[in-house]
Length: 167
Image (cartoon, rainbow, N blue to C red; front, side, top):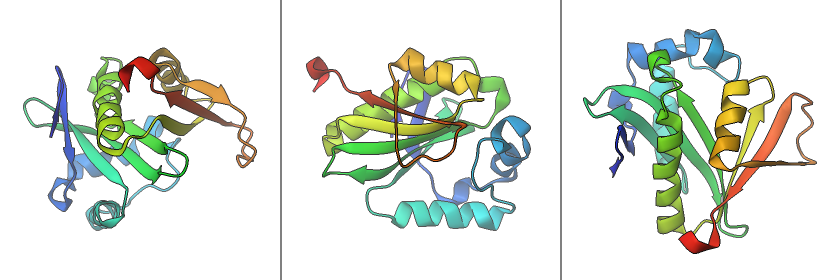
């Protein structure tokens, strides 16, 4: 478990697949930016099970201190050759958006991946239309860069490199 001021992160289990979690994917603000949305609790369980069985994949639930599941953060895949990891984050409970939860979740998850795996760089893809997410990533210190593999004109590839003083 990774503890913060407002939240904590813990590895998701199949028991976390709930109707509330599934309902996140019915929200336009989430569904517009997710490649493939689960349709059933069984789909959620399969996603969690597959993620947890994958080498180098860290799927954390974001919970408030009353143990309410409010989102997820996924670090996957880890590339030890390039010292990078890809990030995916979602605050599913809309009343928690805009309150610094995603920022704190990234701080906790990055500290974990930098400390436990000696990873130096986090990479993500974001839809340019997801203004709130782009703003969050820029505020955190992510910088956009050209990714020749990304053929989607609406996509923005960004990276964050841990400052040398924190290594």
